[in-house]
Length: 273
Image 1 (spheres, rainbow, N blue to C red):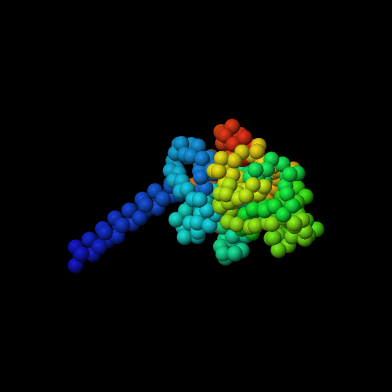
Image 2: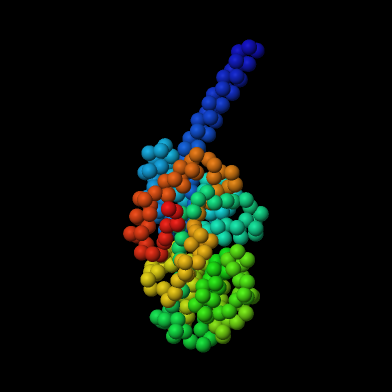
C-alpha cells in the first residue's frame, strides 16, 4: 500500500513539474493575429528583438476583421494587431466581449481611390461610391465623403456617435454602396469606369494602391489619427502581462518608426512618440 501511495505521489509531482514547465514555456510565447500588410510585416521586424528578451513571437495572418478577435475570445491568440479603437469598441458592443487596447502603434489614413477617374471634380452625377460596411469604418468613410463635400451628414455626426448610410441627409445623387471591407479593392477594380471607393489602408496596400494616388485622404489634423490608431488588442487584464508589455515595447521603437517611414510612403503613420 505504501509503495502504491508513493508511486501516486511521484506521478503527481512529475505531472506538476511538467505542467509548470508548460506554463513557463507558454508564458514565453506570444501568439498574435494580424492582417498581412502592414501589421504582419511590422511584427516580423521585431521577432529577433523579442527573442533577445526571451520571447518567441508566432504570427498568424488573417485576411478578415472577425477571426482575429474571435481568436482572442477563444484564447487561441494572446493578442492581435489589425484594428483601431473605434472598431474594437463596436466589436465589443456587438459581441459582448471585453477586449482592450494594450497600446496604439500606427494610423492608416483612409483614401478615396478611383477607377478611370483622376479627380473628384470629374465625378459624374449618379456615380457609384463603394465604402466598407462595418460600423466604425462605415462611419469613417462617410465622414471622409462629407469632408470632400460629396454628401451631407447630420450636424452632430462624429466618429464617437457613429453614422450609417441611413443617416445621410443628402447623397447628392450618388449611389453609395456599403460592402465587406476586404472586398472593396476588388469591387472597385471590377466596377464601371467613373466609380470611386474608400478603402482601408491595409487593404489598399495589399491591392498595390499608393496613398499618393488617392483622390483624397483623411485630414490628419483632425482627431482621425488618434480615433483610428491601430492598436495591439488583448483580453481585458492581459495588457499587464510581462509578455504583452514586452511586445508593445518592442513595437514602440525608432527601428519600427524608421521601417514604417521608409516602407509605406505615408500610407502608414506612426502615432507613438
